[in-house]
Length: 206
Image (cartoon, rainbow, N blue to C red; front, side, top):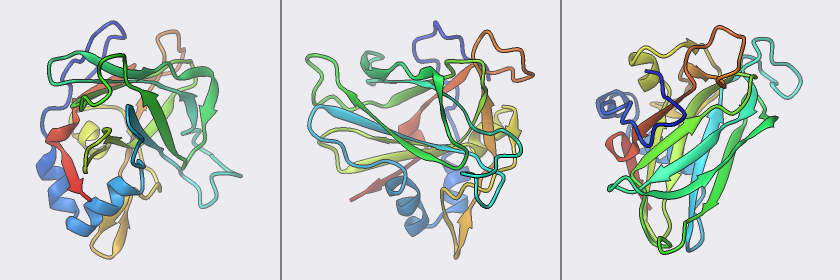
């Protein structure tokens, strides 16, 4: 399940809706996505990324180093056109257990274009373990979400995590997180990134 950093939008994950639907009820799906990615203003696409954690207080303790460099994110239309992107930052990190919102201005002429594909690519040598991804298009009442157990089912390297990304019944759901790292890394992580047709996984309507 590796992704070349030169690939446009390889459809790495094309299934998984049954995995998500089988775990969450309607309320759990809603809380999962709405808690991860806010509604964007006109002409902006928002992406939310949750990072794994292995401690009750990851702000003070991250014993398994699940935090890592901020990845690059790109979103694409159904036709494969780049709608918006963020370069990430190989010198900065997202903390373990954090839920991060990335707001990206849509490219010229695509203010109201809805994205369907999303890619997340590592930028630096500090590997990061990702628990969930959410997408909210401009002028759209629908939000989409993906969580990392789908990546685990596709063979990605993973780690157990305590990051809550939704509800499964009355319990907070804590998926395993999946690792990505930059091309110059010396660690054992094999995957540089991943992408998916995110509308195939889960969606909620406001």
